[in-house]
Length: 409
Length: 88
Image (cartoon, rainbow over all chains, first blue to last red; front, side, top):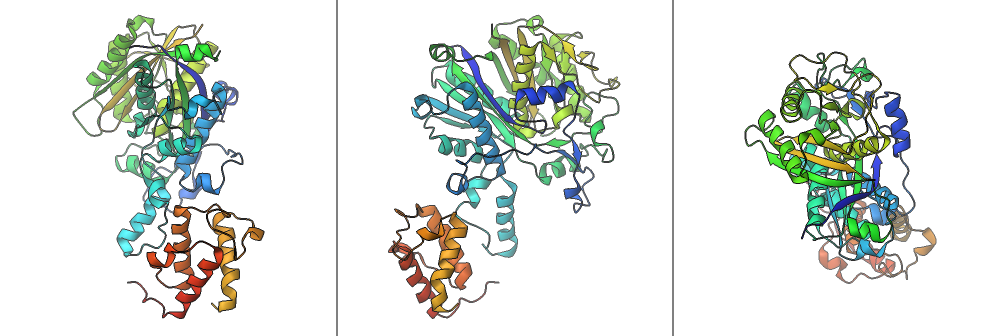
């Protein structure tokens, strides 16, 4: 059994707004969501005091004590983004949601920071003060995925895609395969990341964060000669994937078709990306889609602005797509939203494809000579009419993903 | 805590902890049916009561609790016992 899979709803909470119109305006204006974090002043050992927090958002009244008691911020954002996506798809309250034919693939780097600290305090002090019935469920890695299930009464399969920076892209890939092979009709797929100082400390320790604390809007600088590391961002994004026939039968609006997914591992180094296997994953996605590399009109890069990551990714991309492939990184606007970036970048790339305009990488003034030759979108971005785009993501531990989307017409 | 304050303190705690309307908290109110509190909420209520009373609450203390008045009686009984030794 092989079925076609389409995207019928998108919802996100981002640093630049919570709907495509608002976000598009900010992308067109080349506005960054990065700011100086005066809240982090106390962390004197951390060099990078920059982040791109999610813009303020309101929660409707159904987010009450009982529905939210098992949620930390990451689960709240995962649920709200999923609700926006379901509403966008016209599936809010639809019987299919509770039928067992709808499932969830969702992930983040981890659960929430605050409950994790409660367990840390217990280990240090021997006191369980601060632990409640919900401390663990807010901390656990699959907190987002199961809270989405509880909130909407979803009874299909749950696939927690807790793989750091590929959480969102793996979620889409797994959801696509789940529908393709007939196991579910609808999948909520995405990722999220709440802002905490922890992830910044992780990359700071590896000397991979940006230290441009006095000039937040000039960083991160993916592929730029003067890039000095990544900036952590916050966000959530969920997409609704649906069996094409199911979507057609209910007259759903279709954003794009998911036509290719590749996923592999470097099997080499815990943090150093490997260009060869990164290239292989792009080829796997092309093979799955049955497309030649020349069919891809735009590449959405992982492009974190780390020293090694950008070089390895550019070499892999050049090897597969050649030097003339148009490419840009949305992390120059949103920072690295970790668990959210895979789904967030997929959503925005699809919107850009449907608009016929692709955002440039901001802060990319001079391409690093160590990066391979590609058509790096700069300046005012680019008007491109294309039928296919690819979105690539890479995670610690050497997980690589590539997703190919076809324009719906 | 004086015994006469127990009900009022319990009421304030339930209102704050579980977002309940104060007029719903009567001695006869049933925790599950009337106040919509479930097993998870009960655990958090016990944790709160332990903080309030300085006494360790045993699971047996709560097995038969159904109403707000039942909780009040448990607290009163606990308060009559000597406080638990402070932890390390």
